[in-house]
Length: 220
Image (cartoon, rainbow, N blue to C red; front, side, top):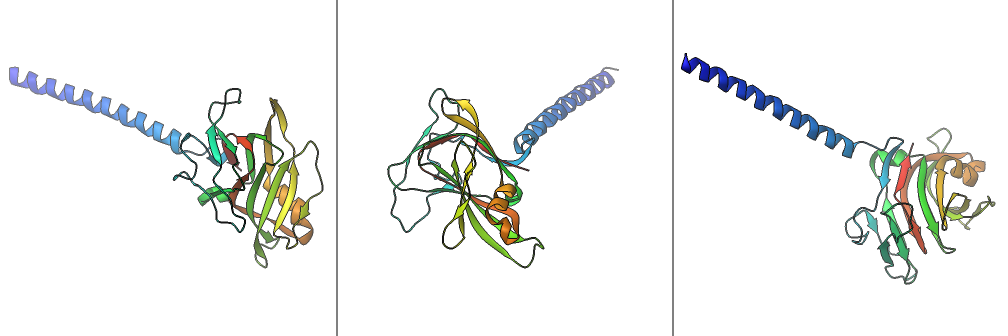
């Protein structure tokens, strides 16, 4: 009887441990799912959780080589008074560009959503692939250079037509901050729609000038 009781008790304890372990695994799985799933309204986001480390130290950003000689900018976490505690503040020491390549399913994003504080020299660029409306006969890369204004201005291009300068307007948040929701398809239509070209995908984001920016959501 004693042996049977001990065996039964060991089975009960074992079942309890297995049950507890199963709940731990479920909880861990939920945490992993929460961290890996896309944003509720998007595909991906460019975040700045690694600050104060430099963005180009293995965090997806790069300082591209350009014909015009430049120097790495000073970068900081956001100062007090920003809408959230974590973001990127850039103070140039000369000419610079910061590039972030968009990869995987995030290339299919159709909107950029972000809060930012732009100085007069600040620019946000997006390298997009545009294609003919039949999606086959023409496909090429075009830079969209965005600058903030209080009202829409007429788009203009460089001599080659490979870069377009486009105004964007944001929703004021106070203290110079504005919230932006940029439709890439609409901006491509503004730039090259008259050439029967349409938006296909995003390849790269570039920053220039003096600016502060919060995580950039790449949304559907």
